[in-house]
Every structure is written in C-alpha cells, then in structure tokens.
Image (cartoon, rainbow, N blue to C red):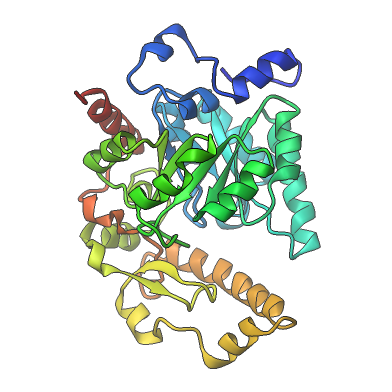
Length: 355
C-alpha cells in the first residue's frame, strides 16, 4: 500500500515505521521484512539506482515482478532521453506497483540542488513514495517525503554517516559494502551490518549479491533487504550495450578493480584493456587539486562532468572500444543475461525455500 497526501497522517506515521503490512498474506510471508512493509513490495529486493543504466523499462520490470525498481533522474533524462515527468509516467504505464527515486543531495552546486528539489517535488506529485538519498544531509528530503506519508532510506558506508542519516530522520539505511559496484564501501557485508545493527533502523545490503545463495545469506545475516545493481545490468530490459553485459557475465570477482580515473575517488570497474591502458590512479595535477581546500570543488566538478559523459558513452557503445564499465564483485555469481523479472522470481523462490 502506498499512501497519498490526502490520507490520514496517523496512518502515514504507522506506514513509515513499517508496522502496517501490505496485506494479511504479506504479513505471513517468509519474505516480509520492515523494508517490504516500508516500500509496499512483496520481495525484499531493490534494483539499485545506476547511472547510466537505470532505464525506465528495467526499473518497471523489477517492480512488476515484486521487487522495487529505483530510478536515477540524470540517467532517466540525460542518458535515456526522457523528459522527466514523461519518464515517470512511462514507468507508471509499465507497472502499477511501487517504484522508488534516488536523490543525490550533495549541495556543492546550487543549480544542481535546485534541480534535485524540483525532481523530488515532481516525483511526489506523480505518486512516488520511496526515496533513497545519497551524499548529503537528508533532513530536507525527509521533511518533504514524510509530509505525504513516504519513506526515505539513506546510502551509508560506515557508522558516522548512518548516525547522521538517523539524526536526519531517515527510515532505513542502504549499507554499501566493499563488494559493491561504483563507489564501494570499505567494510564487508557482515562487518557493516554488525556496525549498524544497534541504530534501530532497517538495513538493506548493497554489494556482492549476484546469486540466489548470496541473497539468502544476506537475509540470514539480518538484513531487511538486498540492493543489486550489477546483476540487473545483465538483463534483457537494461539498455546497456551487449559488450558491457557480456563482460559482466564473463568476469570474476578478481576482475573488479578500483579506479580513480573516473571521479578522483576509487570506483569499482571491470579491469578491461582500456582500464589497463589508462591506469588506475588519478593524475598528479588532479591529486594536487583534490587536496586543496579551494581547488577540490573545481576538480570534483570537472570529474563529475567528465564521468557523466564518459559513462554514458561507454554504456551505450556497442563497439566496446571505450570499455569503462562499472561493476561489483557480484559478477562472480552472474552467468547469463536474462529477464529482470525472472531474476526477482528466482531469488524470491530461494528465500521462501529457506528452512
């Protein structure tokens, strides 16, 4: 059940706290967790927001199968060419089930911050009620979303960011571990859960899950859900180029390396010939600028603009000539490109079959 702004505020509070089930059957389901109750979904599985791979068809396919597809605004508009509101309405036509939004809320750019506020407002108008915040203080997002009965989870890699998210009023945490794609954390799945477990919030595992076995292991470790990105790139619905998908299927965990060349901060990518040719470390000028109090903002801006263009080009390039491909160590459990809905159903069946 996804609440709307006209419904009773007390019901909205109960919904955010995860004490209302989506149905009587849902309450009895072996897959029911605080996350599934927060999101109004059947399966504790998120298709994580991915720049540049979160196209509407992929997001909707995961939600339609019972998980939660989460869209990423810049991917939706810049990479896949949709006018923002029209893109949201396309997803609503493809599925009537809940979808989520990722809000990158770093405020170094006033223009970008204003655009993010606008994107969130439009998403709320279009009925989105689940948000994942990243890279900033989520309080202002929480205030907007809670006002209409929605839910906010916050990306974290360690306890201090989790505490700031909790202090900002978030409803749950996305715990990004050291096996994740993109900007991975530094701690293992198990260690990160142990570090966050006493904060009193539902925790979703992000990183290293590409197989049913790992999905079940994460739930058994105490996680309220699992967020997967790399696994959903290797799907029929994802618009990523075939060479990218094939590289994920063929890669093993040892093929994932950390590169500073994309954003100045280590990013998990597949160790392709192109990566080997350009190297893994940021150049000396970039490293110097990133250390300076006055220059680091400019260097980060340069990196951000460069990476937005570079990742878009690489992800859609069918020639595979500029193979700068983000992926996590979950590649070890991925051996085929298949429909996104089939992945959700297979993982759900494995979780239901637990002793």
